Image (cartoon, rainbow over all chains, first blue to last red; front, top):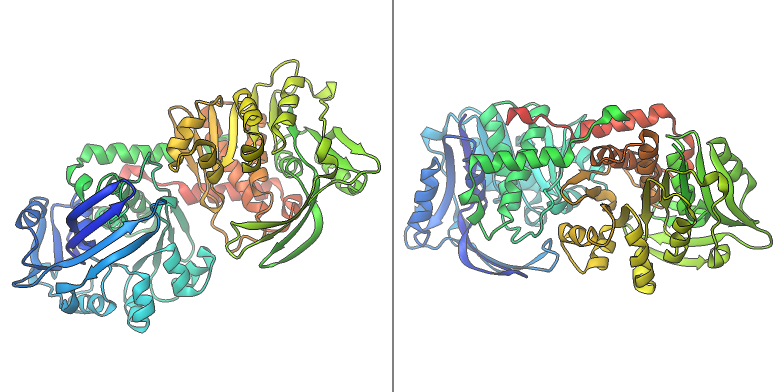
Length: 307
Length: 307
C-alpha cells in the first residue's frame, strides 16, 4: 500500500475575516501527508525545505509514518513562503507575498526505497518537476494523481499538457477546468479534459463540493455544510490526500471505489477548514473520521424506492 | 392526495446567450402545476390571468388534471408579463420589463371544491396575498409550503415575516437566506430561519443544488450536471412543484420523505432548464422521470462499507 507524495512543504501566513494565523506550516505535500497518513502505515514524502523549517514539524510527520528520505533540506536557504488574505466570502483571496526560495530550483529525487510505490500523487508544482518525478520511477505506479493550477496554464501550458497526458487522475477546480478548455459548462469541460490523457477527472468546487468524471460516469460529493469556514487554505490538498489515502489503503482503482474516495476527501477537507493550517488535521482520530463519514451518508443518502 | 397551488400564470420573454424565446407562457403556478401534475391525478390551481392568456394553454393544463376553477380570468385586462436577459454564467439576469397587469390587484379566491386540500404550495407572490390564501382555508392543510423572493424582504418585510410564521416549509435561494438573516453562513442562516416559524427550510443554490434543513438534520440534493443550461427560468418553481408533487402523492411529511422529495424536485428542475419555458416539461413521461431519478442515484450513491 505504498504511496509517494510530491509537493511543497512551506510557510504560510494567512488573514481571514476571523483572524490572522501568523507564520504557520503549509504546502501541498504537508496537507496531503497529514490527510493520507490517517489511512496508511507509511507515506513516502518528496519535497524541499530550507534550514528554517521547524524540526518538530518533521518529527510530528515522522510519528504519523511519513518517510522523509525524499525531503531535501537546503542548508543556508529558506523554505517557500506564501502570504494571503481571504475576502468575506472565503472563496476568493489576494496573494500578499510569494517567496519561492528553495522551490525556485527544486530538483526532486526519488529515493530507491520509494521505487516500489504503487500510488503517486503530484501536488501542485511546476509541470516540469512533476514530469521529472514520473520519469524517475523505474516501474510506473499503478495510479498517478496530479493536481495543478491556473498559473501553469498561463505560463507553461505546453509543459502542463505533456504531464497531463502521463497521469491517470487530474484534479482541478472549476475555474481551472474552464480555463484549460474554454468551455463554460463543466460537463463539456470534463469531456474535453478526458481526451487529453487522464481517465478520471476531479473538478473541485470548494464549498459547492466536487465532481468525479470518467468517460461514462459522473459522481458528485458535496462539501459538508459547516457553521463557519475558518480557513480554506489547504482544503484542496487535504481533499486530495484523503482521496489518495483511501485508494492506496484499499488498492482498488475502480470508479466505484473512487466515489467513496472523494467522499473521504470531502470529509478530510471539512476538518481542514475548521482551523488555521493543519491544526485541526493534527488532532483528528479514526473515530472523528468515521463520525464525519456517517454525517456524509446522512447528508446525501435517500430512499428512492418511494418514488 | 389533493394539492392546491397558488401563484402567477403569466407571459415571459427570455433572452439567453443561446437565443430568444419570444413571448411564451411562464409564471410560478404554471411551472409548479406542470411539475406536480406528473405525480397526481388532480391539482387545484389558484391564479389570475388576463383575457390574452391562450385558451390552448389552459386546455393543456386541464388535460394534465389541473383544475382551473380557482383561476380568475379578467376580461379586458392583460396577464402579468416579465422580460429578462441572462448573462453568460446563466446564474445572473437583468430584468428588462415587468408589467404587473392583472397581478396588481390579485385577490385570490379558494373555491369550495379546493377546501379539502391536504397540501398547499404558495408560489412567489405578495406576502399579503399568500396570507389571505392560508386564511381562506377552513381546515388548515396538513403541510403548507411557501416560496418568496428578495423583493418582498426589501419592500414588505413585516408582512413577509408574518406569513413565514404560518407555514411549514420555506423555500428561498442562498442569497435570499443571507439577506433574510444577515448571516453569510448558510448553516447559521438556516438556524435563524428555523426560529421564525417554519419547521423545514429549503435553500436553493441553482446549479449547486439544494439544502434541506430541519432542527436536527440537513440533507443535500445536487443539481444534475448538464452539458448546457439552456434556460434557467422557472427551475426553482419546477423544483418546488416536483417536491410538493412527491409529498402529496405519498402523503408522508417526514424528513426522510422530504429528502426523496427534493431529489424529485431536482430531477424535475433538470428537465426544465433544457428548453425555454415549460417546453421540455410538456414532453416528459413517467419513464423519463424514472430514468432521471436513476441518474441521481448514480450521481450521489456511494458505498461507505469500504471505509
